[in-house]
Image (cartoon, rainbow, N blue to C red; front, side, top):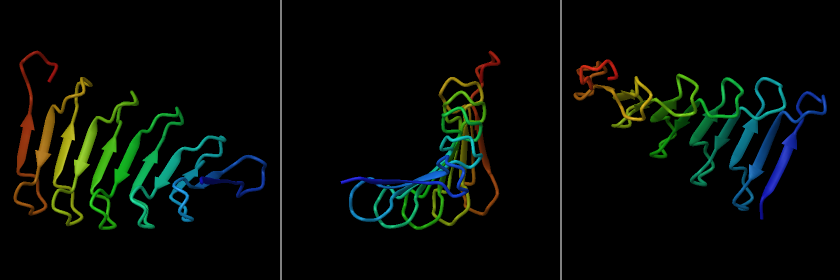
Length: 145
């Protein structure tokens, strides 16, 4: 059984957030917040694996109803290890940053520079010393990356 509660923190009659137990286990697993007061949820935090800790946060920064950024703890260690950003506002994540070894430092960044859905540039720290040492740029000579 799902339990969903709306919250009006400032008492203006407009919901400022929603808390939900979507899997019916008695614990809150999703929180949505209207950060800018426009009546629409623009930040959602979720406990997707049911361990009691938030592991995914999605943000609609420009208020268009489409996620602009997502941060995830995919390995359950309590630290964000994957971040995706829609930098051009087209509704598609075009930059992804990943901590591949779980040390809290981003090791790989992949970017879709021309908006075709494929990574055009990858920057990586392959020896995990905190400095990028590998960069791959796909360029076929047609200025389309």
